[in-house]
Image 1: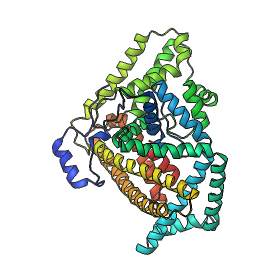
Image 2 (image 1 turned 90 degrees about the vertical axis):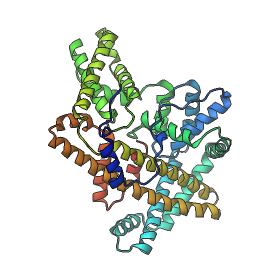
Image 3 (image 1 turned 120 degrees about the vertical axis):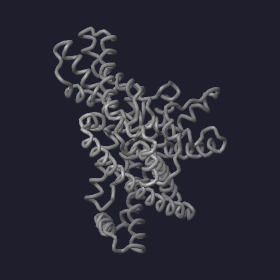
Length: 434
């Protein structure tokens, strides 16, 4: 499905926005948008499986994992191996996240106390830390519990320690490249079946094994489906649902105008969701294709109706924010690994120093993302005002009213406004698995 990106047709306007409104000053990389494929050819099966394990393990210490459905048997095998080991360490991951959040908040509070003691953030953070009780006692308890989890599940822990060493080895030998890690992470985010964090690791294992939702989740989906008593009802529902899915999944600000993967994924989801009634009413696949094409033409018509309006090119701004998100994700992964290292070897002074440095970098990157998010919300609001002035707001709302990035940024802004520019770790997890 090809669509033009809105806000990307006026070079003069884009250049002006670049010069006057850029906030996320990170070098732009075209590879951020070129994320559709990661492939390996002519590689031994053992090396290929190791490569997949490295690519798939980028989110392995998050409390709720980001996981996409595998596209080959060897990828499936690698993913299931990872998840089986990770399932044994779910409690360890939760404890580590809690300890990491305390460390981040404490480091932030110490910096503010030294550099900006009147900053309102300081009062909020200190209150949060105070609610944790005696921090030494709390952290010692977490350390003890984490050590118990390591002893209880030593083989699983050593599995990920060895995988980390393997990643370093493969990067050094260029068997895996940073660009491949970045591309594959975008593939995971695009196809994340756990975007809302509803599934535990054990549930994800069952989904990957069977290719189906857990029974309870499937029953919820089925109960939420509209009542269908005829073929006419079914086709109307499919048309409505396809329209909804395109509005949710397709980012009309994206500078890459090929949205065929999203459209195909939406069609696949509909085929799976309505498999029983489609068979019951013997719907011709060509009839479904006609419905899909009708909705796609409708979508593109809305695009054509607003292409002549000069607006802020949010797609470029979001690409810059994506680079910051990648940095945040890497820092969180490094911090998790360093926390694990320090838990196992408390006297490792280098790990302690590295952790302090990474926490400082994380704080800076978070502030940079928040600044970018605020600009994003402001830009989008101005774009909508321009559409109102041009009497095109109905078309604009059709295209952006369900945009997940816009919704997420507005939610993050609301949280920041209520929480003195602090985003809780739970929301950061959603932002970085989006």
